[in-house]
Image (cartoon, rainbow, N blue to C red; front, side):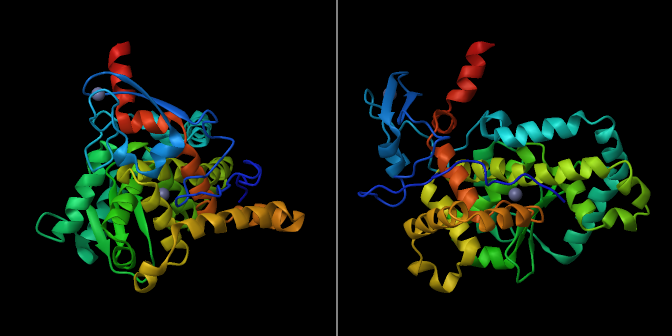
Amino acid sequence: MRTQSFCHVRKSAVSIGETRPGFVGYRQSMANDSNIATVSCRFCSAANRFPIDKALLDLTKVVCGSCKEKLLRVSGEPLTDLDSADIAHPWDREALAKFKAIPYVEEILSKVLGSTFDRMHLFRHTASSLKVSPRQAPRLHRLYLEAAGRLDVDPPPLFIVQSPHVNAYTTGAGQPIVGITTALVDMLDDRGLVGVLGHELAHVKLGHVLFRTLAVLLANGALKVLNLAGLANLALGPVKMLLFKWYQMSELSADRGELVATGSLTTHVRTHMMLAGGTAKIADELDVAAFVDQANDAEALRDGDIFVSIMEMFDNQDRSHPLLVWRVHHALAWSRTQAFFDVLAGKGPRARIASK
Ligand SMILES: [Zn+2]
Ligand SMILES: [Zn+2]
């Protein structure tokens, strides 16, 4: 399958300043070059302007110059009225819109999948995994509710799946369910778990689940099992290519949801570092800034060698997710935008109400 390469996104995306405190000296051309964010205080309505670099050092310490209350909601508070457009990556939005514009695609999709798929998956998970609830794994349940509050979404059923593979997923046609493997639960701390659960809930929030389910079914040949090979090969041929391309893009939006869920850049980078090669055993010895340096190294290696660059482009075609270092690039770039601060300050919903 051919999917869009991330090679062309930008050059020299990341640089770390001499006096970096962690990784916040991060720079990217896609980010807010002015380095100034503007936020209205939700308590006294005073307009506040502050340097983004400084704010990113510790988002919990950004306070109103007038009333001294915290300007940003980053400590687990629900982000009521969060709009999916607030976190959707433009590449996700554009690709999904093109996909939806193909005639009959949604009709075919709902006919092929329908509620049978949902019931089947709910049965499979109920019969063989652990359903999280206030009684069952209550700590994880609390973290899940926190993530759902941050993403302003009704949480679907969550299951812990016994598996040595580090993974979390959301599946379904109309009634999604979220799964997280035991390996991932073991690997991450509580903040990391809020993040990955927020990532999955962002897929729900953004209306990704139905289309991602179709992509997975097409990729693993499940539709052939359903005796729909003809349909899959003929009617869905062009859709398939577009769908796989979009599947990667949708991860960038879900990563934004992950960042919003925790409100912590450190947690976000740390989680992706753990996914790259972390284990609970050495978690204390891992360094977030060193991983951002490694992301710089990866970019230099790719951009400095045409063959590596071409190989990366072809490798990318068979990948379900963008490479971890590029995902970190994109999330950090977004954290340097006014849009990110609008979400944390709650400006988006207020602006929408005011415009009604
Ligand atoms: Zn104030
Ligand atoms: Zn995802």
